[in-house]
Length: 256
Image (cartoon, rainbow, N blue to C red; front, side, top):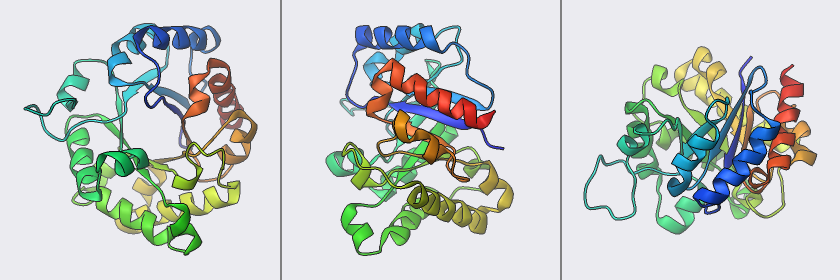
């Protein structure tokens, strides 16, 4: 059985001081990850060291929301994987729909970032998902499979076994809308079957495929109960210690 991954994507929220406050509240409730549940928070880059300090001595991991595919250079505002490696951060979100929509991320640059992240022994959380228009036109399968094909282009099976894939229907991000459990399972199963076809059953069975798109305490159990849903990449609900810990508790119950 794959571990659940309950990951918080804080987006552009929480500076260093408010990061410590939130994580102090969270660690009052959660100090040890339940069996077969991994806990991850991804604050803004400026708050990563504060987050790492706040979770020291716990099982909570820290990641970042974006990296460059270059090692260094005249790239104002970017951070490199080398910088991440100077911390104890472990994961990198890549290809989130907001990066694609607002900052020019493309399938090609996602692939370059994924390769760089893996090269430096970090874990990429590769975001894929369709827009509402694409779903209404019955293009969602093709769109998501093409995004995965591009993101994993040029990778060998052993490298693919180290990635996390986050299925995030764009129409459910920050809207309060959520894919039904059946819709989520359909897409996660599609992704897993595609990985099996391309990289083999062993790789497919090992890859965590998490759901992103308004997962909250009230719908977490239905979503996490699906066979191929291995956790959540959680936005708004990860910014409150009680709601995030409630989702962790749901995962712990199902994992147990």
